[in-house]
Image 1 (tube, one colour):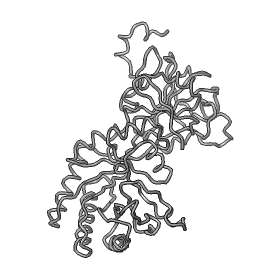
Image 2 (cartoon, helix red, strand yellow):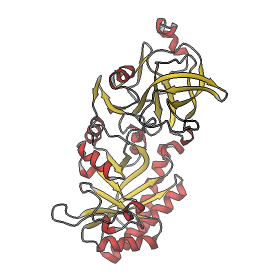
Image 3 (cartoon, one colour):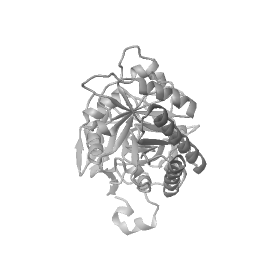
Image 4 (cartoon, one colour):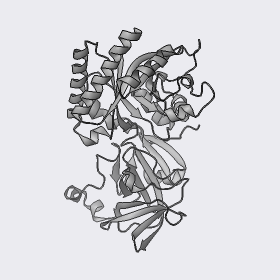
Amino acid sequence: MTLLDILPSLRGTTTPRLDPLVWPVTTHCHHGRITVGGVGLDEIADRFGVPTYVLDEESVGGGGKTFVHGLRDAEMLYRTAPLLPCGVARSVAERRLTVVVHSRRDVALARQGGLDPDSIVLVVDAADSRSHSEVPPWPGGVGRIVVGAGVRIDTVAAPGPESGRQKTIVGVRDTCCAGATIRRVVAAPGLDLIGIRCDCVPTVGDIREQVLTAVAVMCDANREHRVLCTELHLGIAGGATDIVGSSDLADAIADAVEDACIRNRFPRPRLSVDAGRSVTARAAVNVCRVHHFERTPGGPVVVLDSGAGSVVAVTTGELVAAAVANRHPSGPAEEFSIMRCGSMIGAPRCSGVVLAQDVRPGDVVALVSRDGSDLVGSAAAVSVAHGRMHEPTTG
């Protein structure tokens, strides 16, 4: 037991152990043990082994709430996690969040987890669509599909009485390429063009320029093909809410849409915003156990029990926090490198990880990434809520 445990009032004068802007909202420290969703992370490590990918159901989708509140009637699009346990899929469905997926496996996991097809947006990559010769390679059961200039339209959807016409969004970069793609989509018997997507960097000038282009393309589609596009999807690059103020960005988007519609005398479309936010941002924790600790010429290294993958390099900018989860550390903090047990020389490692100097073998260590991704190739996944653990779905 430490002095902080004996005299809790001292905690108010110390630096918080867990940054509330990084960790899941249900994260607490109780007698030195870190809990998420009312469950101790050391308990999860004992039950499921290590490394384990833990998702807080209550925090799912929380990363974009402040941003979307600044946009009137806007739909927020979230990226999916590499793993989609049943509890997370259930939370997404209950909150009526819309997720963006990029693969068949993501579609299958989302549907298996109970997500409404209308809440799933499939973005088809041009290279992936060209790599398949069979038609159709993509599964049904998604609300909308986003296609760009290089996508093979014949691989996107199969017309048929069972599935009906697939709602389709065309991604644009310029009016010339957009016109050719729109003609192919309109001519496809199984596709129904309902909107346009444009991507921009989070600056007032680029947002205005790209939105003006997108609305102009909508006008052209209406004039040439008698198709009224009712949705505008706006992609903001670079994790927008981290680069500029949420309210400022929301105001810039709202002003750009209103101005573009007035200039083109076009009815205001439904706005959907993809700011690159993962549905698991601030909702996931990677639970690991220390195998051993060593000091090397390059600095101290914490070696974790081996998992199915390896720790990603810190240069990706994904790892943002780490903490000993099974006890309250008593020593000062120090920067470590973290690597997987059994890794070969030169294998990827996280450097610059701040942990207590007294970290020791057997300690449970929690790692948090910016987007909630699995940093360590976890062998198991579990979601937590209200003191309960939910086993993951398989597939």
